Amino acid sequence: MRNALLASAAIFALSACLSGSDDSGTDPLPPGSNFAVLAIDGEAAPDGTTFELGPDDAIAGQAPCNRFMAQLSRTDAGISISPGASTRMACLDEARSEAETRFLAALPEITAASPGPEAGQVALTDTDGATRLLLGPLAAE
Image (cartoon, rainbow, N blue to C red; front, side):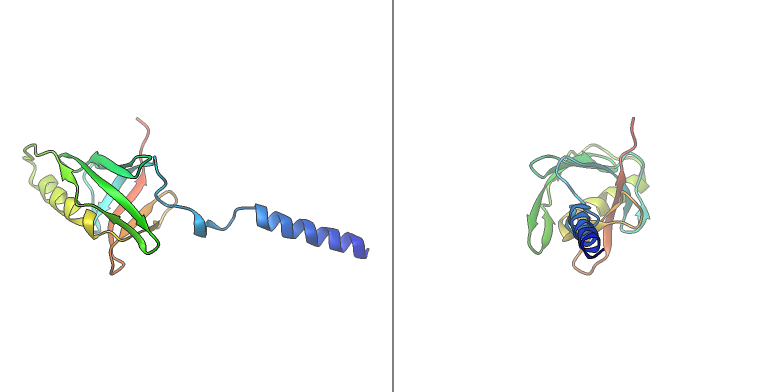
């Protein structure tokens, strides 16, 4: 009986080590991931706004009006995103233009990435903990 209990305890301990149920080490922004931007500073993002992370942490995507590119840097303290650059096509829709201004201004303010409120979402936050961008799964085309 004693051996059976010890064997059960050993199996339980090993399965806990191998289960991978602890998500604390999971990177919410793994290189090569693509997201839809769901919200910018708490307001719904215009349809088609994307955030695409390359294998070298280069960021590209579709801002509300223009294509953009930036660079993600990872440190022990969190993340930072370069101000980047964007194309400068005319944006005739005033709401999209305003959203683009807020989107591009948010990028260099981001200091952390964490799981969002729903499965598959990522919250990109600033030093005050405010969610500047909320990302979600990119819908299959």
